[in-house]
Image 1: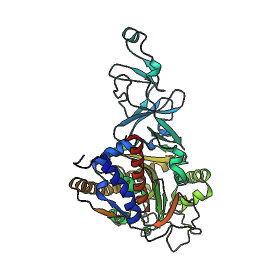
Image 2: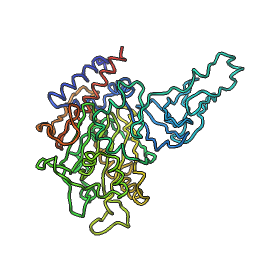
Image 3: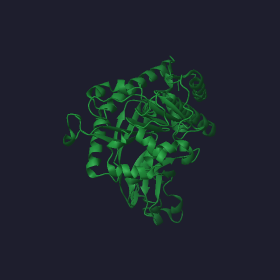
Image 4: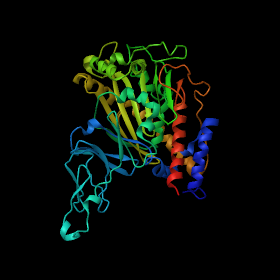
Length: 467
């Protein structure tokens, strides 16, 4: 750590940030990518919260597994055992601590450490040790040296893991689950994620999905000029305005183009995205959602997105399918096709993030609809997506400036004032209460909630484990 700046000093700085955000609507730039603060995140944030690991459809058969991470270093094996139970284990041999899983996904009856061939069942039991009798006599009790299982909970097919969570997954999601269920309740087929590394801090991706509809028309102006975000016939534009829903637990999201300040939320209808869905999918979604949840889904004219704290983001967006069969004069980029994807912003360091980008589609969709949706997603996001690279360029330079501020001691406060002049919508018809605030977009309330929860989690973690 920098001279004079020990862990206690950093924790006090993080604590002051809560007051800065609540009272002055500012965030110190240095907090974003300070390497010393990153060390606190590794100890007090990621092991204590719920981290999305995998979707059940990725490990649908007995023995199926994927290798996923909590933070940069905690490697886990998420596996469906021979007893059909889903578990997550530390990727760590109990003999010498070597990682045992060398593939990112596969199917295995057992896992064998390459070092000394200690072998484990896919339910975590140590089942074979070379030279067991000759080398250990009766001193090795294999039942005490199985793989180390971490805490997991499955929510609507989404598998979360944690080393030592401060609360249950249900409590972690809280009232915000009413909104996440709009996607998570659907019977999804999840494709193997695309993976790449960007030179930016993980919090910037999470914050962006939590609140930032403000940047879309500007950061992605080249795509806007091409007409790619247009969901309807050529020349029809979509408003930036919409609704943002914000949880005190650090989750946030919203929809664009659905509602304006002049329109009454309890009566306005703008069924735009969902009209482009495969009819089979639409029937399925109507069946699994409540009427009120389907109303939210149907009102998202331009997009829906949210971030589940800390680093699990969703986006539903329609754009041209780029399918030559559907290109017309009105739809020069192909018929508007909705797609769903979600991301893990996995921290590698204070200035590097591995992005795991998952495409998901409803199992009931036709093969033609799945293909159209997938190609629309690939053109927009992923390592070659036209929107993805725009965003990452922003985050790279923010990270560089944050590193400069943290290392030189030149503190710069960033204003989080957008939307602060507006009160929450009190008579909103959808789920809200003491835990959820509803705001008109554009606004930065979601970002402030994210940062406050980030600070609170690190401070509580330090109080419990820092002694």
